[in-house]
Image 1 (cartoon, rainbow, N blue to C red):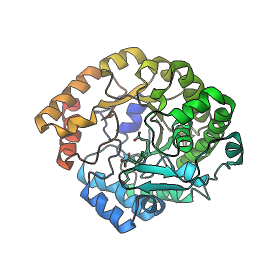
Image 2 (spheres, helix red, strand yellow):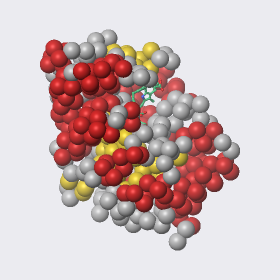
Image 3 (cartoon, rainbow, N blue to C red):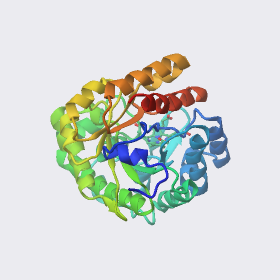
Image 4 (spheres, rainbow, N blue to C red):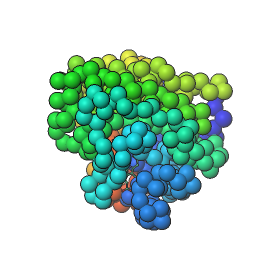
Length: 353
Ligand code: CP3
């Protein structure tokens, strides 16, 4: 039992029965919505938007006014932690994030402080509190953080990357330096997520966006290992309610069995695996979240509806499915198509006995 009016998301993440399949979408608040672009213009830039709790709350609520979503996700970014560690984050139009002071040596890593969520990251925790008030317990709020490995890719490369050559050179030449960085990040992420939980987040998600670029051995040692440390340190019960953990390794379908045994409640899956196969492989160990290709939102409403039907059928009549995309909504998606998707998930999952 939760005190939420609609607790389908929490129930599905904990593999309990639901009246219909819950749905939310990664990047549901974002540039594809004209009202988001207006609020961002009012803020001036993306980081100011993240750092102003009232505006972060405003954009979190925007997709909920349009669609019958079963969860809200905190509007923020995974790069708030490296920003609070003093790396000098800025976003340049069209080029994504960049750090003024990337991490390249053991000395750089040793200098890093672990941010206190209630001071350096207070704007995020304050946004969680503001959003919780606005939601009035109607639907759950998902808190999130980047995985240590994914955060480290941005911190070491200095921004987005295609080849990951600098961090992979560090991984193979100076593994101890990278391990020290990842262990500091694991400590920082644990404190950050626990502060989000204390402020009212009902579930948390770890975004391991770049775990999939690693070898199996490196994934276990440099990514999953640190996510396991985080999960072991999270507050799992608040007022008798379980706080479920979703782990999303993009491109991680080859490791479903090991991620299912890592201590998470649910695994986010991208569209490169058939959901029926993913379900077969994890059995009843964890719930699954996914996995429509976000590009299908470009297709016709009829096509979108068929695809929703097929993913729901692929998962089957079992508890433990949260419908989502396999990655975030892109800025060029027509907002009306998102409504088609959300309504189709509820319609088709209710009809099937
Ligand atoms: O899902 C949501 O609605 C919550 C908000 C959210 C954002 N970023 C907002 C955002 C979440 C959960 C994130 C996580 C995030 N941020 C990830 C992991 C998830 C993923 O996409 O795999 C990563 C890798 C980042 C880092 C990041 N932030 C990048 C690479 C970019 C630029 C990409 C781009 O599209 O230009 C951002 C910026 C960002 N984060 C935007 C939003 C809405 C766009 C900013 C803008 O221009 O308004």
